[in-house]
Structures are given as structure tokens and as C-alpha cells.
Length: 165
Image 1 (cartoon, helix red, strand yellow):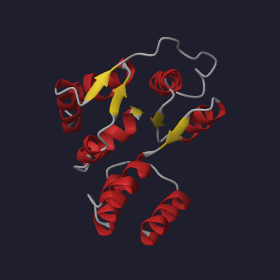
Image 2 (tube, rainbow, N blue to C red):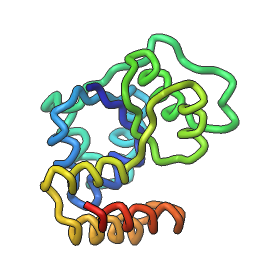
Image 3 (tube, rainbow, N blue to C red):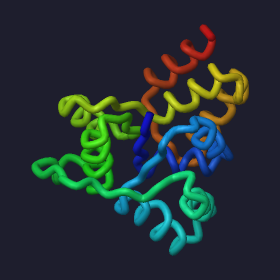
């Protein structure tokens, strides 16, 4: 299976030392150039450590840079260019898009794209046994403390799901 990543999941998984769960998927991992620019180019200019971590994934070809052939138009006021590119690339490749922004996810779903967020990757890591339930809670809390935004209902649902594993 192929997975296309938006910026936020990459940034926050790198910030809390969970980039390995991306690597463990063993999937074909893609980002469009616009995500690279947001995460690596802009991040390095600001001195963000996570930008260097993501850049290393690209250098090792764990994550590949691929741009969509056809870009979506009409959603410019609703979502960023990178999110539009992620949705377009996922649609073209009939694969999963990992996006945390709620509006972008809704647009992806309207376009019949299989859309998930960071929680999905962490949940899978717990299911695989590469992350304990307690570690998943700690990492999510750390992400929130570092600025990751998540609704309280989503947070509670995630904790409930983790408890059921």
C-alpha cells in the first residue's frame, strides 16, 4: 500500500521521536514537493530539528518526493496547497492520505480518498506492538504540549480505542 503524508503528521511525529513508526509501515511512502517545502525548506530556515529528521528520510529514500499529475482547484480558500497536493496524489495513486486538518480530511473524503490522521499511525504502531499503550499516551500528550492541535472528542476517542487493544 502507498501512503501520502501531509506536513503536520511528519513534523509532530519527528518532534516526539516517533518517525520510526512511519518507517515500520514498510509501505511506499510519498510526499509532494509542497510538503517538502513546508517541512524541510521552511523548517530548516527556522532551525527546526524535525526538518532535518524528515530530510534524512528523503535522502535515504524511505520517503519519496512525487508531485501529483493533476492538481485540484477550487479549494484554495479552504485548505493549503500542500494539503491539496496530498489529496490529489492520494487520489491519483488510489492510496491513503495522512492529513490532520479536519477540513482537508473532509474534502479528501468527498473526493473518495482514504484519509486518516496521525492517530491512525500511532494506533497501528500499538497494534503491531512497536509502541505500548502507555507510550502512545505519553507521545500524544507530548505532541499536544508542543503545539499539535486535536479536538477533545478525538483525544478521548483515541484513548478509548487504545484501551480496547
